[in-house]
Structures are given as structure tokens and as C-alpha cells.
Image (cartoon, rainbow, N blue to C red; front, side):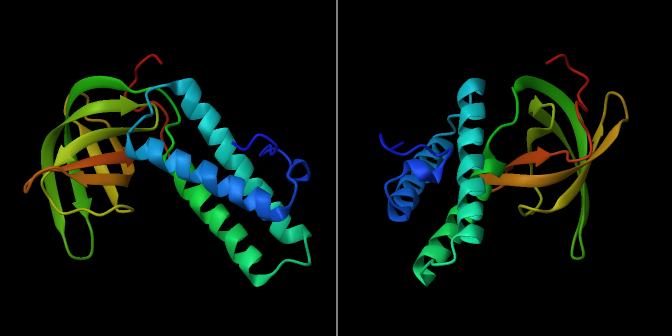
Length: 185
């Protein structure tokens, strides 16, 4: 962050231009951390999430309360809100644990219905990371069944990464379930 600007309050910035520039620098720094998959430090993730929320909140408040904004400033503030929101969704909400839990993954869309048995390799209170072989896109709704307990949960694909021709690595979030894995966190 810039030395003379706090994300907590725009009044500490010298100008709106300085606030916008400082926010963009911080968003770029956060985006680089996500590219490096640097989310192992829970305290750093929490701090990053709060700073991103401040950017979104302050940019929104500024766009609503300053009547003398140029079109460029309005666009930049909207872009800060959008980009900050995208990065917040990528920030881990809690610790991860490495596991090996057999599951059956179900996908039912307008063009495809399929099921596949696979292993969950990493879990959190809010989701899981696993691999699958069928075509799936970010934002798609899937169902998962634990092979050991028979319990089911709905999840949303929040990220996907192809590492070879046949396997997709997926990150799922369970929006309506907390601690599906029944682990102590």
C-alpha cells in the first residue's frame, strides 16, 4: 500500500486519483498472490480479504457520494468494485486439510448428464478440491456423494484448471453446507 493512503478512509488520500491508483496497485499485488497460489498463510488470507472488502466498500461509497465524478472516475471506481469482488471470491475463507476421501460427482446440465467416482484430495469447511474427467465450467452446479457415508451435498465449481488432456482439477464451494467433511478445524 502507498505510504500516505489507508484503504480504510479516502480522506487520508491526497486525491481521488491517488486513491484509485493505490487501490489498483493493491489489487494487482493480490492478483499476483493468487497466481502463485499463495494462500497457505491463514492470517495473510484474512488480512487480504479485509483489505479487498475495504476497497470494494470505499469505492462503492465514493461513487455514490461524490456527485462531481468524471466518466473515467466512475468507470475506474466500478472496475475497482468488480475486480475487488472477483478477488474476494478467490480468497480462502479457512484452513485446508489434505485427505483422500472417495466421492461420486454428479453433473446434470442441459447438454450433459454424467457421474464419476473420484477422490477428494483437499477439503475445507466450505468446499473441496478434486479431479474429474468430464467437461465442466466455472459456475456450474454439481452434486457430490461421499462413498463412505452416503451423505450428499450440492456445490458450485469456483475454479478449474486443466493440467493434462484428460484431467480437470476443480475447486468446489458448498454454499448451503458448513463442515460437510465432519472434521475438527
